[in-house]
Length: 430
Image (cartoon, rainbow, N blue to C red; front, side, top):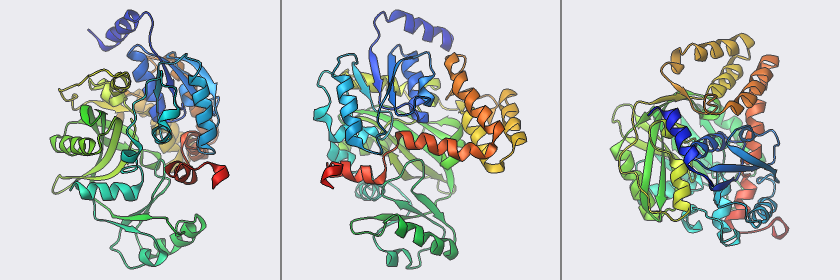
């Protein structure tokens, strides 16, 4: 049976679909999760501070709730979500982005009748920050680039081999990562780090050697340390902030082994995603980042594994597993990200339209590829955000970065908010 027909049949069979509350609707991961949940037969509600958020415009979304921004005050946001859930209208709370960190810390405050799959907070702390991830990977002998944890300006300026990446403990969409190629760039970076207070007492930074090879990502769902399902893909074309425009699904047995051992060691419960570089010569995966949540699941859906659906089922306590690997060689893309990248790189209307033409004619990275972010054939509501962004770029191509940063501010936790959550401290106590 064709995919779209099977999707429609599955939706029709569910007379009373479970209602999911999505923790935000501005991120790419949230928008893709909406599609993945919708085609699995769930009804999705969204809360987000932006009334025009990317996820609001979907036939799979029932209600939209305007909530406080989690990054400005996570505790006010939490009160809003808990009050909403207390009404008894939702079966599952689905953490679409960094809100999972907050929900793990405050799990007991979530109404008990609402299902939620997040790991114990002590496990979260082992991978949430960049320095913690370095320590955890080292402990488990999971390969990573040569990495050093530093705390002072003097340690930063000691003469480390160039190029390297400098990473803050907390950052979203590469906002806390800099590639340092030469001493001049490093010298210019120091005042910015001081301004951000990154050399203050207690702060840590990570210096990580630059690995060469293909960027790949892996996503998994665990049930109390047991691997339920896993999916991976390679970045074929880079977008803003190091994100993906085009992807190719891959199956790596060694990556599966490392991810499974990490999840078992941490007794992970819920979604866990990691980024790695497949080194050019040795073809060994070296892990560079972790996202303790589900990231952009639609390449997996088109490859035969719906991780969003499985995450809901784990949340509900079902004992599920997908022993077979997802299909490899499946190409997907996000045209919206391609348009933003073209506009940002060249600030040209012509180049923006050229990128649109490449996609419409299935050329370059769009050849034999399926749209994953705004699949209009599945969801006609996707036309609204696509049309809005395209018109903005054609009026002012230089607005690409502003559009991207605006979305990030809606769903991301600030470093200060992360610190408050880590020590369970409200703003009044700081």
